[in-house]
Picture (cartoon, rainbow, N blue to C red):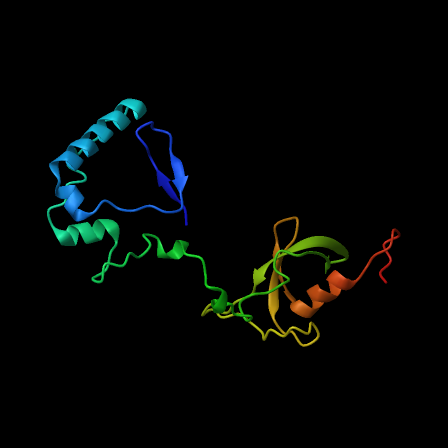
Length: 175
C-alpha cells in the first residue's frame, strides 16, 4: 500500500510507511501551532482556503479512533479494506480461469471472428456455471466472449480451449 504525503512544499510524495500523530502530540500546543502554520503554508501554495483551523485538534479518544481507524487494541485497519491485496492462500481455482482475457478465433454465424474472453458466466446467485477442471476436455465451465461488434455470447471452455490450440494456415485452413 502506498500513501500520499503532502509536505509544506505542496508537491505530494509517495511513502509506503507513515505514522499518525499521537494523541499526546495533538494535545501539545507547540505541535498545534506547527500544524496551523503547515495549513497556512499549504493554503498559500495551493491557493485554497482551509475551512477549519482545528482539524487536527481532537478532544475525544473515540473521535481519534474514527480518524485513524484504530480498534480497541490500538491496531490499525486499512481505511479502504477493499483495496487490500488478496492473500496467496485465498486462491480459488473455481473462480480463477486461465482463459479469461484470451483472444481466440471463434465462429459466429457463417464467419469466424477474433473474440476476447471477458469472464465466466454466472447464475442469478453469482455462482460460476460449470465445474472447472485443469484438463480442457473435462472443463465444463461456461465463458462469456465479446466479439468486435460488442456482442457477448456464451461458449463452453473446451470450445475456447480448442480454438486456442487450433492453428490456421495462410489460406485459412485449420490443422
